[in-house]
Length: 141
Image (cartoon, rainbow, N blue to C red; front, side, top):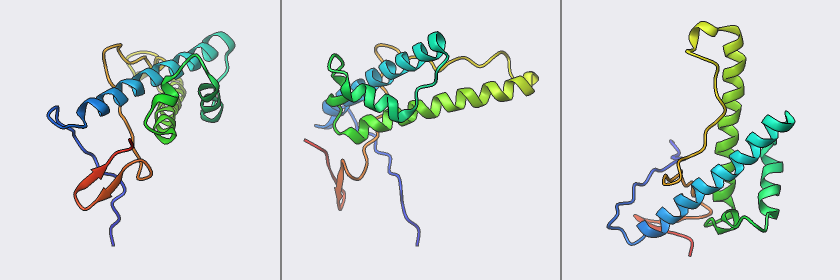
């Protein structure tokens, strides 16, 4: 038996859910950039790496930054932070490989960049967020 673990859905602009999901993708980008700013600041100025768990606590407690709590669910916000953590781990792995094999690279790997202001970021909704009945998806309200 083959288990399907991931589904990808492309929502067209004509869908009634498009505006809501576009807004959540925009919030996802804001959350990604805010968390990336905190990570970059800690790394550049304090030579520290902030873990996913610490970052999650920081953003949950930040009263001045509402985008974490504005995400459709906490799991969606946490998935954004996990994605950013994966990008940082990839950066460190690339730097490690670069020190051994400089000829494989055109230059030293750079820190993960910010998303552009007008862009959107991926929105990950788990089966806890979205329910599927036959061919209909039920989004959180």
